[in-house]
Image 1 (cartoon, helix red, strand yellow):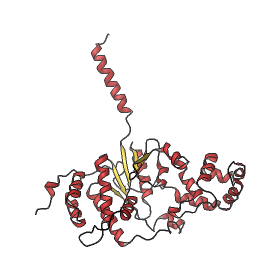
Image 2 (cartoon, helix red, strand yellow):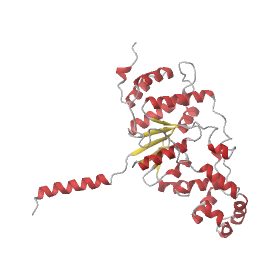
Image 3 (cartoon, helix red, strand yellow):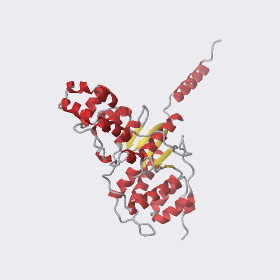
Image 4 (cartoon, helix red, strand yellow):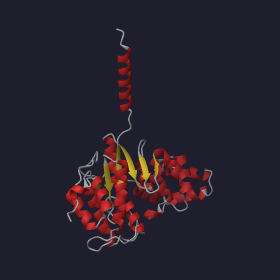
Length: 329
């Protein structure tokens, strides 16, 4: 049977559309490392803002602006916000008591603002992740695993290099403050190693931010050379007798240090590896945005003394009309 030309064109376009749809990029789940943005606001925003009880709100003001920017710009359908609750009770502290011991405890003024930030996220209908034994990185890693299993890709909002180890093809990491985005293939350009090598890289070279010393004498460049040659930390340690023959300055001494600090290197890798098997609550695996709670939004806006423009943005981000909920004067 000879087909009608017009019908054939329609069929061709329909099949092409289905093919394009089948190859469409998976829907993203936005995973926010909240603590980094709360701390940034705490250090950069003026302390002229106070809540109804006179406590400072500069951190929550800055975090709210960041969060609203993301919601307005991206309009995410799937999103989770991870907070660090395990500041000194993380499983890593049990493995290595010096872990993050170089950091001063958060003052009460900042702790209160973390609580306000969580309340704001919940009121906006966002999934909030927190755990007393795991860090935000672990919660993001576990959430991303669930999201992938549900057919999503991840967009991680954080500048933290540790989180680059989570990137697979299709995922992105986004340093929102600098507006820099990179995927799994971009990790090598930034750190000299592949995404999956980040835990081994940090175990060897150390991570001063988390008070992980690494192997003495093994800096970032040497760690990258070792991993480029051997592939992973286990192979470096198993074939350490080959290290003196590699072409980099100090290779013989590096082999000595690797033998001496073998156990520490393996311990440090346990610290630098993100746990991806943490319970992340009932919102998994899709982390759908739910409806905003108008009453809760009104209460937090009052308590934090947000201005009218910020309140309008908050209600709009929650899909609500501010005029319908504005306090009567």
